[in-house]
Length: 414
View 1 (cartoon, rainbow, N blue to C red):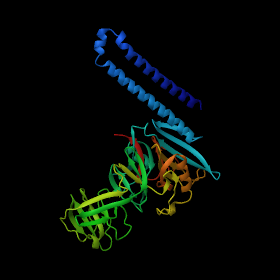
View 2: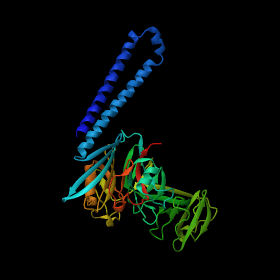
View 3: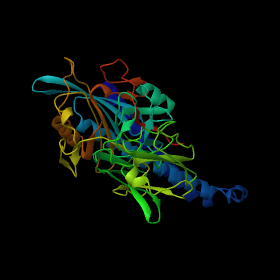
View 4: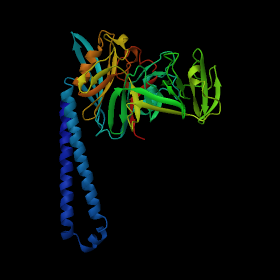
């Protein structure tokens, strides 16, 4: 407590000092014409007013940021009473909390980011490797991306590491949605959360067919799927009575009933022969990929499910998103944002005596209490792991966390 008070006193002195400097500079600018000798005035004529004016602007900006920082400090202290709060960087706080549900303890790690103060950082999903079929622990993913914060991301296929659900990084769609599950869109100026559908097609002119998914496991034999080089070297096996079409530089280069190599400058389309037999080698074609909602200017998308908070109301649609198997008290990961675009990342420990985990409804209520107007669940259980400035801060079941397909990271802007 004494340390916190001393820190606050120092900040008050800093604000006071900045204000005094501003008044001094203003006085100097005003007095300059009356007291500065003519020769000195001539030397300063081209720079003095401009420089002092710029300094005034810089000082006012510093005062404004300091006020925002103090307000953020107070807001976080009030929001998370009896918590251990650490400043990671300007506008980035790590909060450790122990709450009790039915007399049982639950340990929670929260990272809250104020984008007005954390101006040097950006939020993005990060893959474990250049191709989808890879896994690494959270520390490796964070270090590879020079990130100060990392939280496990989408669901993924444990055997291969392929993300299950929508994943877009830097406007490039790596994988499409599964069961239209909820996802977060990340924009330059904020966030949005919605259930996402794929709106994709392949072909040219009248010869156009619907593409059901991109770089995802086959759900139905009737689906037409697209595989890009991010999937790996070879497309997935052809469905029964199916075809594969390799496209290189927007032209069909090969058609086969067998698995095809994915061209480095193209993709492979795989689906029923009854749908794809209209195409022939040499055809000029196009793969058009969009999402619903269209989310113009979206930079990144990361999926999860179910919803936890929707339009400022607790909303858990576990059954609708075909996630009935993840009920009960478990380790949990979640992401959301507040009305003023503060980012909230949460990791909940579970399956141990010192922390029994949360139900999805308990997690939803916690995200609402943290101020989220929209929030969603991420992959949890054994995947739940949070990294803060060089170390894993929660207590995952596997020391350091299991190998992951991807993570959501806070990293310095390039």
